[in-house]
Image 1 (spheres, rainbow, N blue to C red):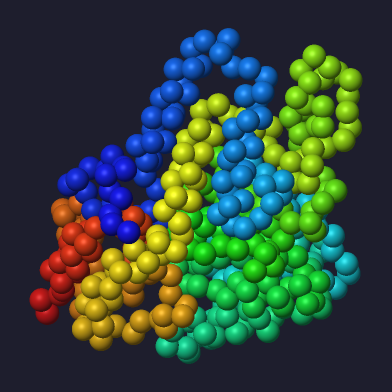
Image 2: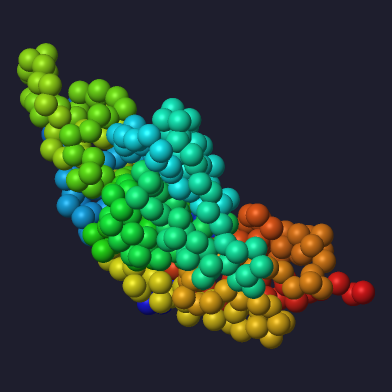
Length: 385
């Protein structure tokens, strides 16, 4: 794959290495939004079937991306909504506990903490060995060993949001399945840029905000709810989620049956006529690119950066635990952090500071020039002491 920068409207003077903060809008998604806004001028053009056609299409595209049945996909407004939906349908027996990662993103942590408080269950926070030179191996080992027959639920990010550390989702999912624990994955920081297969990883619920690696707009997300959630209770009682919802003339012939499978978990007003067209265009393009091609592009793009860090004797995480699209850099000891901050701003290089890591997140809109500029900034920020 070649650079896809031409599909975006990024300022050519800015080196945007910050997709983990927010993905830029594609030109095609922008055009879809404009057309959707214009359509709102005259609602007469919106027919009853339009409330259902695009949601169905979006679900189909997401299902293709994560390898699931479209009927098991639900539209949500945010990741916290998805977590709340899943957790409200998970029982807890006396003596059971829940598991979360150390330094997990707040939405996941607070959602699980609330569930534990309501169920008087212990919350186990799992991290790496403190004396490990790199965290990947011990963190995965500790996590797997912590999952026991007393584990009710594991809620974790697919990759760590601060540094892109990869977790062995396949082994974790299998362990959860073996002991009977529910496996909830926050896919926000990898779905769309790294392999996500809910069947292979035995994921019970996959929750994704769309505004990062799915290139969607802020305010809409998408989720997968496996068969563990069949027959569950949604957070709200939207009329759109009933089996007779497409019969506009007879909506008050109240049908108490929900739509098939995970349709019951859709957010009210799931047909969002502005945001859905944008997300639909983004998912369409991601599936055309394919995730393996995106991963390969990001991997190739960042090789010069890793070569530079190795030349500076930086201890790097084992590649097995390293994401190609998002990673946290532990800065060389001779870096002047204030000078670095100034140089990043002056050279218009956009990255994030997360948990003491310089978080770099790349995608198909980046080019070698962006990486070269970051290396140049790092090299020019060395202390003169």
